[in-house]
Image (cartoon, rainbow, N blue to C red):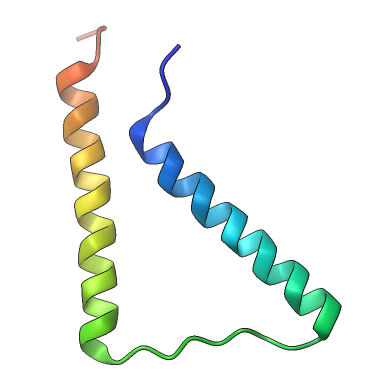
Length: 65
C-alpha cells in the first residue's frame, strides 16, 4: 500500500496544530504569526503548488486508472 504524497503535508500540519494547542494549554498564551501580504501570498502559492504537484503525481502513478 502506497502513501498519498499530500498526506505528508497534511500530517505535518496536524502535528504543528497539536503542538500549538498544547503550548496554548500549558502557557495560556497564543502563538501569533503576523505575515505581510507578499509573505502570505508566497505561502499560499507554495501550498497550492505542493497540492497540485501531489495531485498530478497521483494521477500519473495511480495503478487503478
